[in-house]
Image (cartoon, rainbow, N blue to C red; front, side, top):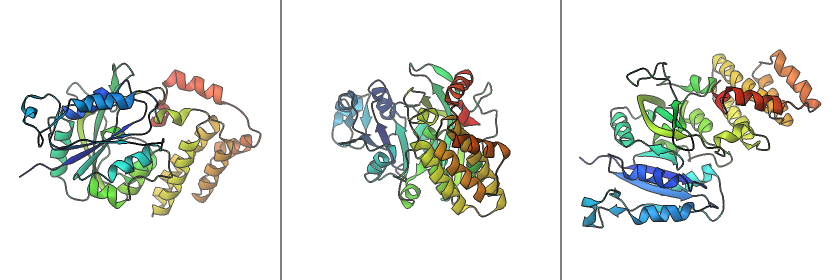
Length: 342
């Protein structure tokens, strides 16, 4: 019986420094039945030339006997799509999704790296799960721009196993409450992704919305292995959450919070969502997106949760009180972007 096909959609935007290592980590997987789909989102650097050079060294087993001695090989012809204009991650992924035929799918940013047995381990786990499981996710090793390991997403013991109890199964309430899944480690059931219409192209980022929409109906499985090197890059999409002059992430978050409100069925779920909304209201104030402070507060009112501090921040927002410099100093002392792990 042939192993199931896995589609890996590699999303590249100005990853010239990292894209060769990323694609090669796909080609060197111990699992061989892989469909490689690369979407370059109109990179302005030399990413496309690097991608072409890597693909020139790939041998496809269905087309040539040279595969037997090749270090970079695939069973299926790779697909390389070049966007003529920058469309963003959500639209770029959906373009790749239209070409995907695998049973499972990975959304892979080409500044990250797959460990060589990642696909094999996740497929083995998925094949033992019922059809109501939509996602298998794992631990990750965090690396810096130079590739040096900075630590684990979930702290591990001396056997490499997570020291914390990672939520799995029905994770909807956990998703409402806080960020805990390392997005780059997810393998998804393709049928589920297509059933939900892919990513919402009106959003600037995808993971929170994906978790909200799928975890309401489907289950998640945590595989306690580190399978991915997640690179922290200064100008990455996730880092912009904490920067001035980039409000689209918080605007997208507000939209997703309203989606969650529509799905919630219990007071407990509303309370958990309010916890999230309250966090993002504070973040909007610190980043000086004062109109968004008011918008998040209006959602808190609908959730019947209006803490005193939220009321104070709404009042201060009317007078455009600027605190971003203090917040930036706080982030530097705590570690850039770690505030999101609240």
